[in-house]
View 1 (cartoon, rainbow, N blue to C red):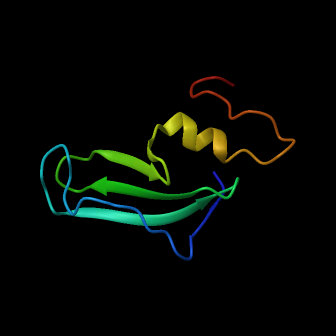
View 2 (cartoon, helix red, strand yellow):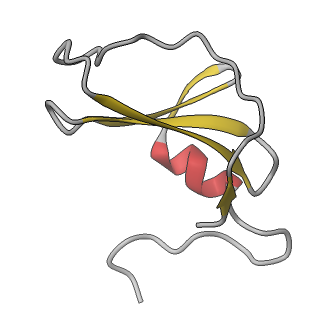
Length: 81
């Protein structure tokens, strides 16, 4: 997955995990291959991981689809060779 750090990503983010309430969350500001700025968040309390983009939550499949380089086709599904 090709990603670059985003220089200025501003989203309305909670200061704790929405699942367990833990304040122990790790946030990474990223820019996907298609230019979409996203924030990846991982909770150290319950292991939940999620992505938030400019329009709200993003599913992992949406993030993967946005990381495909033009002309390279789709991302292969897990477990398939």
